[in-house]
Length: 257
Image (cartoon, rainbow, N blue to C red; front, top):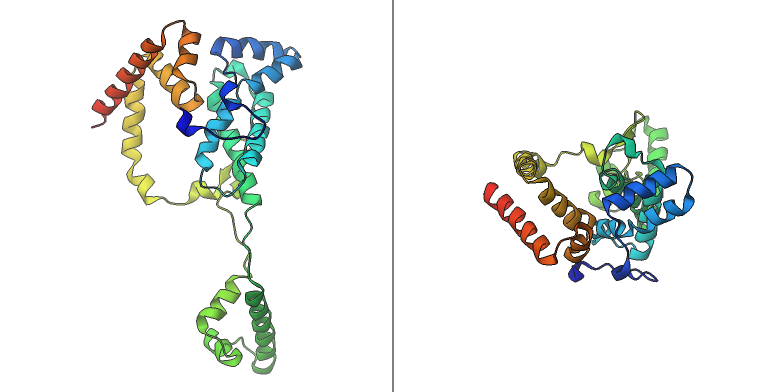
């Protein structure tokens, strides 16, 4: 797991505690009764989940410390709004909230910078278009603008495009009180569409695994627990965890060939 380590200033990621399902249930029961110390324990016990989600943003130019803090905001919101009575795993509920919080931060802090020369050309084009409209009763063509200002057609197009407000793919476009739908969700991904059958096959194959196998894969590759942590939680040896994990992965490989 060390090759996936995320470096966070002031946080010893190697010593972050990971809570078992039983511990989570007990802590949520305490928190729902007003125990704020239990709330703090839940948050601390799920910091590793935030770190695992940061791996999805490896290509981002944002500071990882900042992303971690923002991810923790999403974690806190998830803890405060989670209802254990729904029978949904906390990680299933929490992951989208953490991802959404980080995505909004990246969106809001990723402005497109336009050069001063391009801005100046855009203002000259606007002025020329206004004068042309007054004198001729219609707007000039791109070619006429380029000829009048002694620039290329491409430069005119780039200057005009620079004045358009960019829309983030994470721009919310619909919310009926439930899950928010973002522009990103409505963009066609031909590759993803072609892989729908594969995704369904993977889900079906996972459903065929034993409950313990599913749990171990979920904890290992979604939550980010180590084999040693899982062994301690389940009261078995690390070697047994390794065998169960290998058996499950081998089954998935064989089934999905």
